[in-house]
Amino acid sequence: MRAVVCAVVAVFGLAAHPALAQSGRDAATFWNRVQANCDASAGKTSGDFGPRIAKVAIDEFNSFGGHRIDANGQIFHFGLTEAEHEEDEGGSARTTLGRIGWWQVMKYWRTLFGGDPTDKLEVRGYRDASTSSQDAQDTELLRTSAADLLRAAESVSDPMAREVLREAALRAAVVDTSWSAAFISYVVRQAGVAPSAFQFSNAHRAYIYDAFATNTAEVGGATDEHVYRACPLATTRPHVGDLICAQREPAMTQDSEQVVRERIRAELAGPADKRSVRRTHCEVVASIDARARKIYTIGGNVNQAVTARKLNLRRDMKFSATQTGPCGGPGHWTLPRPSANGEQATEKCSLNDKKWFVLLQLR
Image (tube, rainbow, N blue to C red; front, side):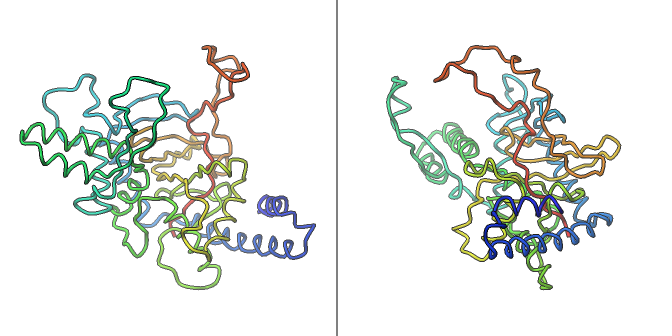
């Protein structure tokens, strides 16, 4: 935990202010206690929920037929996506519902919100985009719900045209509404976790903040029903059924995982609408290959699919900070691109290179 203490000291400038120094010591003490709880659970065999959550995730990945990302962060198998009717090129006259990408995603939404979730799903458009041919024309974003479009489709008399319009509305909603958290909620619910133990939500931050609240309860000796606690990612061994989470906040791109975790902890006492770590993504730890020092995670809405990825572990079987694959050097991509200053922008070449910051560990 020395790295955690150093990060807190560096970020808050503790030597310059006694009150901040005390705050930093309190944070270090808190996370030391959390790490002790995390280590105790990591040293035990996984309980019933872990294998069940992992199995549901694997079964769902196989059913969806999504992408596969290797340990270098490269897609080596491009599978079915959310907007496709089926994976085979060109489609066919007949298929099964399970081969339809958007239908699979609607299954997750129906499990989360009930039989008709369409009023929760957004469909977006842009003013005059369907009629204008001027690419430089300014336009504005339009929003409606899938439910509104479905009601409009009911006025069409031809049954086949009506069905196609209904499906087009649902397909558009699946594309326009982020569903990665709905996928996680589906997997955890199908594994038998009760609503009192996990907040089934369309936003990852709901159960991320809950896991941090569980830390506070445990350190304070209080009881807590939630199935996950929040553990430092780099210092905790993962088990199947755990979740690894990344943050995507533009204002926090340079923040360390310790800083992000401490920000979340500090915001727990405030109102939910003031919580700042909002853009997040979580994936299920589905399998661990100890011999190769790899973990496989499965997530929804990853490149518009249910996707499996392979991630690197260190020799101690904890998450490796190195998740970047070989890019082939600065000159590997030579296709000319326009830029304001005439220089080529540096881009990430690994789909695994994310701002991973916390392990949600099954208790």
